[in-house]
Image (cartoon, rainbow, N blue to C red):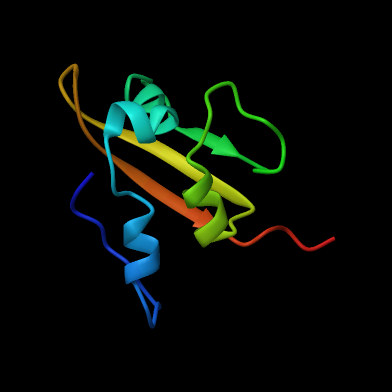
Length: 90
């Protein structure tokens, strides 16, 4: 997974390191979503997902919600847009 834009972050290295490793073995959730044709909104990461998410991703990012949108060139997946944020305040 390459080509990441990070904004308003002082230390980007921990966030970028959450995407290291094998796409097939370490990031099955992202691989599964790359085959999807539609964007996905996850409201709460504390609920289990159908495909496991890398624990390092959750530990470092401490995200509450996210939007995943696969990027395609015709039918071929070429990348993904990820927008994640802090947990909703109740």
